Structure formats: structure tokens, C-alpha cells
Image 1: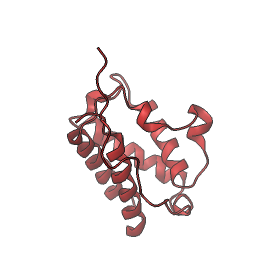
Image 2: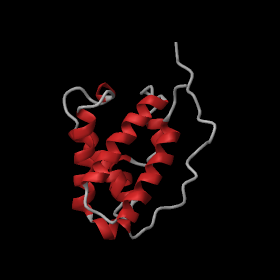
Image 3: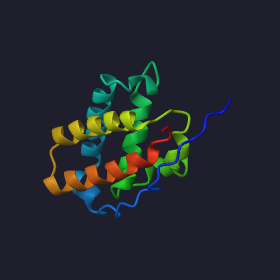
Image 4: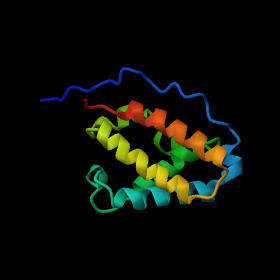
Length: 139
């Protein structure tokens, strides 16, 4: 039996576009470092079971490619995997508000550990807050 996919009442993210200069300010190495820190947090989190059992490296690479693109860098994600369609790609995982909050807290910790301007950190976190709300697919 197929499960019913919940749709958040707010609809798709309404976050204003990110500053296209974020990638220039951070650079690829820092974005990849940010995602590596994020995945270290995920590995110790209550949502670890939502990720591949053996290794988080591919997930880390995909997220880094996605974030690089979102922050104004090269379109690595689209070149490798096609259109992001992140909500649809995450339907196999039951993501409720509790899981979203854990995911977001892992990103918050990674952002706090990554050297960057406070305004950039706030912009990225604001984007992730809006983006993650749209990933919720279970009431």
C-alpha cells in the first residue's frame, strides 16, 4: 500500500533568492567543508537511519554539489543528477517536522563551525529553514 504524501500548507519555499555572491565569498572548499561537518552531525543524530547504511560520502558529495549551485557556484548537481526536484527525490523517506528540526539543527551546528560573515550564515540558514519545510512529507 502506498502511503499518502503530506503537502505542507505553506507550499514551495518562498524564500527570496540567495545572494549570488555567496559562493564567491565562501568558495568551493568552504562549502564542501560545511557539508562534511553537517554529515558528521548527521552521523550522530536521531535521523541517521534515513541515510545510506554503509557510507555517507555520496550523500555528502550530492549535498555539496547542490549547495555550491544554490549559492551561486557551478551547476555541478544538475550536470551530474539532472534537475534537483528535491521534494520528489525525498519522497521515499518519511520526513516529519521532528526529523526536519533535527536536520536543521545539524546544519545550524555546521554553519556555526564554519568561518563566514554572520550575514552570510543568516542568509543560508534562512534559506535552509524555508527549504526544509518543503521537504516535510509526513504529518
